[in-house]
Length: 364
Image (cartoon, rainbow, N blue to C red):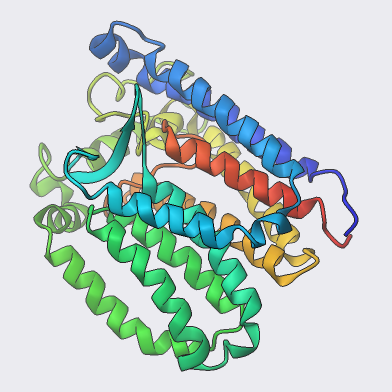
């Protein structure tokens, strides 16, 4: 295979979103971090550290031919599964926000489910590329692939982390459809999936509160409806041009931890509709060039790998923006490359390194 330079459009979009993210993490968190840690740069400095580590991983992975990972994908999947089991063990896994989703590593913590998303994309791309001719068969192709997806999903739900699980399953279903699974196969599982989702929501009272808060936020404005109301209060005053960078009012302890799930609300408040449009435009370029890399990949493994990475990021963006604007209930999904995060930011950049690697071997 002939190697080329990485897609510069893709690189520019990634760096543009990342720079905006670092700036907005500082702007949205400075008040909170000064109050909590006596350092307005606390979150921003850590975000820069994670971004640097992620960029190094992205550059290294972009220079390694993507097909090298075909042979290592099984071991990567096994390691990710081991960490998913370890995080469930009391004393090993750390509980935050009611979910046992983190493992402490020195001063930092890692989230195994973030690694699992990438590990499953890698292994599923190999699995589907080797069994493409069987994907027309429900029993021989579709069902084994579905079982491969649902096992790690079940482990993630034991934490529980519905948002991450939904992103992972949604990404994998896109890959299944692209690999040749019939629409009728999806119809068979649609009913079971809907029933299962209702059961998962009904099994956790906080999820039911999120649904009711989404439908009627003003019935509990200081409780379950607080986040979405404050988010809309941030977006509304932003107007076309915004209040100006650093001039958000909602970050003054109105919007809980605005540097994570609801950072786009602060961005819209400070930079306005045009600032939000700029970020979404950069994500669109990332989506466009990622799909192009998938279509021009020299083999099915590379095509599915690129599509899985683009699908994962795109689904997260759609869910996060929908939550922030009040279109769907709160899920806990962050905005890729923009929200504050350690494992999520580093793994997203590493995933984009693999996408850049695929783009280097495009057939055009």
